[in-house]
Length: 196
Image 1 (cartoon, rainbow, N blue to C red):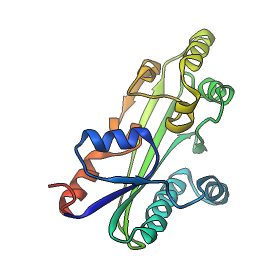
Image 2 (cartoon, rainbow, N blue to C red; image 1 turned 90 degrees about the horizontal axis):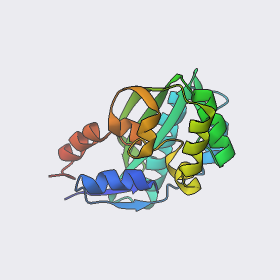
Image 3 (cartoon, rainbow, N blue to C red; image 1 turned 180 degrees about the vertical axis):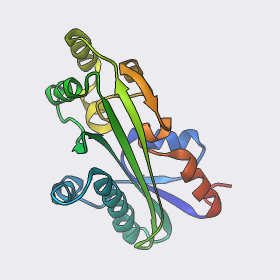
Image 4 (spheres, rainbow, N blue to C red; image 1 turned 45 degrees about the vertical axis):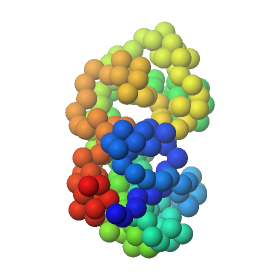
């Protein structure tokens, strides 16, 4: 059987693969994501940034682990065609939630699988979400109840948890929102005999 390596330290992505009974190992991607993002943001759309980062994570990591199929993933929040990064503090999380309050926005996820430095598969998906109109007190209560580490690793809202209460409407795949479009990945893994 072929081997899968997840080039991500995301606890949510690991949990999705574990729950699907996929055998894999995980490693930190071998790119400086923030540095790459700063370079890309000047000339690329948010979708292109996601695609490029997923490809870099998979391809560069696969050079170090050539016997593995390496899965690189990137997910971004897009509002009015702008790339919104994960908040680094509670204050930044509150400001982001105020911006998105009552608004529709998009989550875009890009997957890339590489082997020995070559991309062999990719997939992109998006979901449209609308946050319901929240009061200032609801926003403060929500932000204060989140763990800062979870905000920094999983983003502003954890839809699999209390974050679901923020939304008025969601169109798209639950797994795309979590940051790992699972069904297309499962189909690919079956073709490569990684999942039997």
